[in-house]
Length: 501
Ligand SMILES: Cc1cc2nc3c(=O)[nH]c(=O)nc-3n(C[C@H](O)[C@H](O)[C@H](O)COP(=O)(O)OP(=O)(O)OC[C@H]3O[C@@H](n4cnc5c(N)ncnc54)[C@H](O)[C@@H]3O)c2cc1C
Image (cartoon, rainbow, N blue to C red):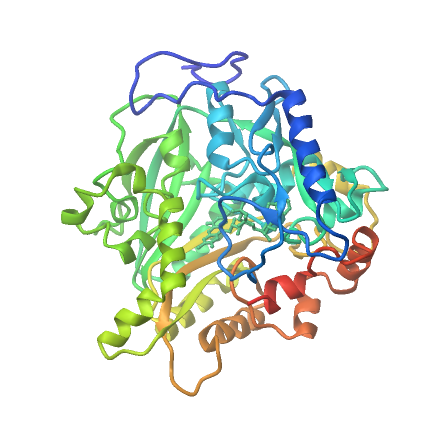
């Protein structure tokens, strides 16, 4: 059934309910976008020379602390929508602070979706491009910045620069933007590629009792894009213990059927588990529920707030089952030190947060996980394979580039034709008296480096300046930073990612 594919017009109406995508979101339009940009520029000009420049933004998915400041931030209130969608060209012009929730609501009615949709609804397009989002399409579509065709960036001199990979003048800004975390400027508009999607995703949960077998199967699927004769459109994995892990395979389908609902009483990550190593468990979700399957319980992190207890969940308002609400609870915990106070009442030591996403070459996955599980006691762990994109305009454009950096993306070196696995873990461990601050996070950094891997910079980091420079762009970053931020109006990447506490 040609439900979504190649439809030029929004699909509205039909059977209301769980398999129906919402009506198209209101598009912002070019004129309103210009007004939003003007408001941003006015707020920039109002910041005294020499004062720090920061975003004034309602939501965040950054885990590291930011230094408190009374300085007025940049007004991005007019930059949170989708400007336009071109269903024929399969592109969208999107404002920098548009959340993926709003972006997906604007594209799904056309039967289209961004090439990579990070799991948390309030992650913004600008945030995912500058902070390296990842999801279960990353084995075929790479990371979110690889489907950006061009972007307008407010650079710290106050100009808006339109950066493109095929423009020699601005290509180095474009290539250094991913993983720059707002230290080179702020994206105000991004033109992105979209891909066609079907209304449903059929899932297979394949169980493994051995980490090496899991790793090897993941490596094959990442290259072949097929498992047991069936096409694979989406792939991620969850490790519960060394002897219980699952690869979750998704296939887009137009074929309707009874769909599961994990936005209410049932919990998605628990639905993956089953006893049969030989036979995969199957499931069907609407495309929208598939894209947001991890948001409802913030993977499994809602466990910490008691919402997985059926007696509590029954009375928990549904609108609070989303990652942005848990963020508010984390904010309260940080402000009032609630967790450590509760631990102290039980006579237990305070805890160190271990909230990280790291990535290693795929052949080192089992080694890392086998080290990580007993060392930290943290489970479950999320795995997501990724490869740099092999086709598409961004690949074509970078073939002609002979920039100073050896790799296409200056601040996060990944090799072409190589598979990696992102490994995410979001929990805490007891602090051992006498150990340095961040002892477990430091141990993880060392292990990741030993396995030829890298770490995302959204959370705490403890690298020395030398190690950091070697991993995240070094001299190339310094040169580009001097070019676009000669007066150091924005923090540097090391100051922001490692030093700012
Ligand atoms: C617990 C946890 C789990 C995570 N899991 C995932 C995951 O599974 N998948 C995934 O894809 N990502 C994940 N992330 C990472 C997340 O994608 C990045 O932190 C991303 O940068 C957050 O984007 P945001 O829009 O919320 O931006 P913010 O949190 O508001 O900002 C992040 C950084 O980006 C900068 N920034 C924001 N907007 C712009 C812009 N328009 N232009 C330039 N710079 C900008 C800010 O200055 C800041 O330094 C996770 C993060 C956390 C804390």
